[in-house]
Length: 339
Image (cartoon, rainbow, N blue to C red; front, side):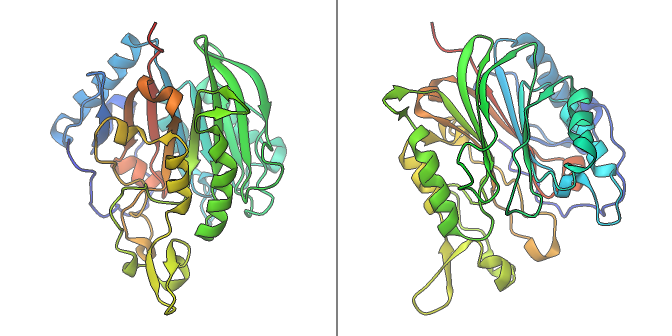
């Protein structure tokens, strides 16, 4: 598999948003167990995208899940919203069944019209958003496709205020498969609070209250993976490095604080890239000059009851996605359970 692109992001002028099979500089980074998603360089980029689209039409029995942190609601500091419009265009190309979006800053204005605009453009339905009481407007939302998904029940504050940004939980059927979907953005301020949030989630790793559950966790977890290589944290200023690293007894920064993701892994949550035997691509680290440290932050984790159904995992790392947000979208495909 080709490694993720490591080029410097282009200048952030308004991009030319193209149809999904004609994106310039497309370099799809994918791990696949089904054979219909391939990773190629830019010379075969359009064929790669077309293959992915064709595969989606052929594999209508799979469930496609997406997580995407859209950076300040897709709204720039000058009030322009070309990023938000470009994000809608990109998400439309994925034909997802379920999409979790984070950092919906400003979207609570005007009756959540931006959330409805996204849903209507995608042909999806939004569940009531998760309000980020402590996260400076970093609200969360989950959208579903009514043709393939049926909602059984839903809580927009499943942790009763215990999470920095909130936690949503939906129990739903995707093509008659019962699934519990958890979506969140773990605390960005430090490992201790992320670990406390992970303790709340740990009960969903295998069984919960005595009942086996099929659970996926989607979101910006603000941590690298349990087995990922150490990022070059020394490139970050101390004020940002403090969010990610242990502080040693001597008062200096140590390695990454991975307690939250390690706890999730230990209690039954699996990383699809590990399951598929692929090196996971970066999802952040390319945007700000102050944070040029490629690493992961965005995950779709499946608990042990779903491991056998993981069919494909993709990070969309393209020239377009790199200027639409400081996070790259993650897509996971779940095949139907074996009969």
